[in-house]
Length: 356
Ligand SMILES: [Zn+2]
Image (cartoon, rainbow, N blue to C red; front, side, top):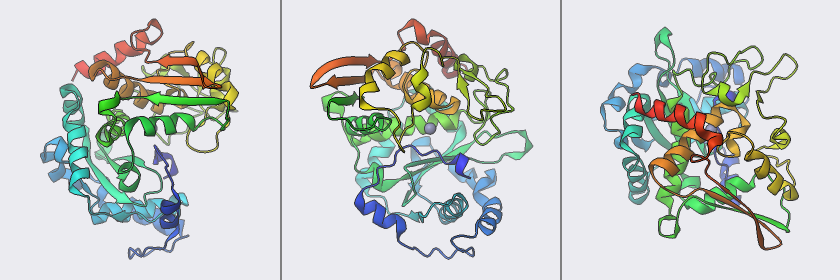
């Protein structure tokens, strides 16, 4: 389902692009364009059942990492056919140094975060040619709700990233390139600016999505957006109002203070001009969104609030956006967690992390 595909990073290099269109036979009984066939088989996949993951949940959380098992690879291929993506995910052999970075990234998370994810995370699985970097999906657990899930990541994209280069690339994607303006992001100090910490930051965002499963934080992905009241979602209603019949997108409580929010699109098709960088971040400071990406939807609001809070307040790491105009620093944006504007969300996150 397209709605369940949370595209986190798309660093499509020329090499990856070639791979994306290579035909790989995985022995699926559905043709590449037969969405009906793929949707039917996808709904019968064992990976959506809790029983499939029982042994995974018995392992310590940092050991729930590996190459995607065959059933998951088949599911991802069916999902791409249904979504119209050309990519054909494949299992991978994970190099030892990469596996160590992933295990260390998880092991170094704060204790209360590890406790929370241990209950809900079936595992982190790697493939090649995912079609995007991050994918989070839920496991059906009977009729009582959705409260566990798994993360799939593209190894080729993550194995090349270091923390600040990845964050800078991501935070530039909403803006059309303009040689007069430059944006740099810092999420690690010099000695810590490595691949392990890029993986940790990317994972924390996806883990935010996993932790929202089965909670009343925001409406679940894929639910119709124009009929949902946010009254029952205490986190989402801090910043959002439900859309109306004529507007299927969620609208925020800050449309007046942040008129440029509507044009903020990450990863694909930048809509903001370079000379709007400073105004966008000035407007963002008049809201309670902790990052610019948080302002794009209620589910990414939670994932971004979670990652930026854990990263800056619990792990004591930096988070800074610097905008340069003709080589001169023109704007510095920092984490909001010590500021009044983010106090309500901070309280929510503190309670969320402590109550379990
Ligand atoms: Zn997300």
